[in-house]
Image (cartoon, rainbow over all chains, first blue to last red; front, side):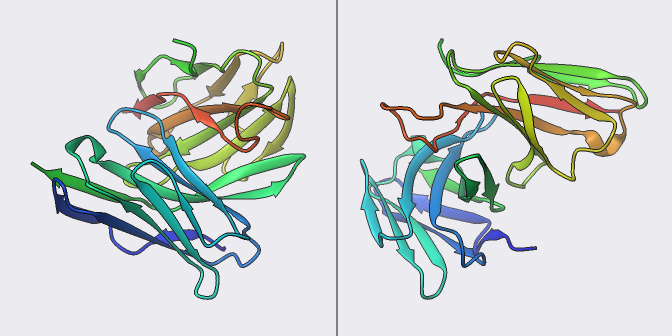
Amino acid sequence: GESVGLHLPTLSVQEGDNSIINCAYSNSASDYFIWYKQESGKGPQFIIDIRSNMDKRQGQRVTVLLNKTVKHLSLQIAATQPGDSAVYFCADLRGNTGFQKLVFGTGTRLLVSP
Amino acid sequence: DTGVSQDPRHKITKRGQNVTFRCDPISEHNRLYWYRQTLGQGPEFLTYFQNEAQLEKSRLLSDRFSAERPKGSFSTLEIQRTEQGDSAMYLCASSLLFSRTTLDNEQFFGPGTRLTVL
């Protein structure tokens, strides 16, 4: 079936560097994407979202880029901090206003060294 | 704490036993979701409630699994005759339809219940 997947399982960076986490999706009908952060022993936490009518959206230290042509989105984290260490998932929201479910990718583990 | 809460946080059981998990969503959230997450994987959708009505069930939800939300507030997920393959993290999430202050689509997750079937 169609899925949302990630390129790299683990990304190691130094504190202060910028991090880029990539995600490929296959469902051409997807029109809403979300990035989640999951720390050990916790549930996923919403970071940022983007709709398909946008190609870029910025939050606090995070930017999501969407390339619909190649079905790719990325999460950029500026000035990465040790507290950013976690597993990051991209997900797309499928369904209509009556019912919507999140379809998650496998995840990328981000390791930030001091 | 006004977030989603789940109980218990950890459950160890023997194969063949029944287990029940509870989820308390954010107050006034009318949508409630159950997901299952295995090690190294993203959460997988199991079932969804809008108020007390169970509107959608995944094919992952075998007949050994049953979920309820009797009064449209808390929800329970029961697994009967547990199998080792049921070992996973069970996540609950809630959201509010027609919210004016948060994203309509934003699902808030609880900390999960980690089930280990021996």
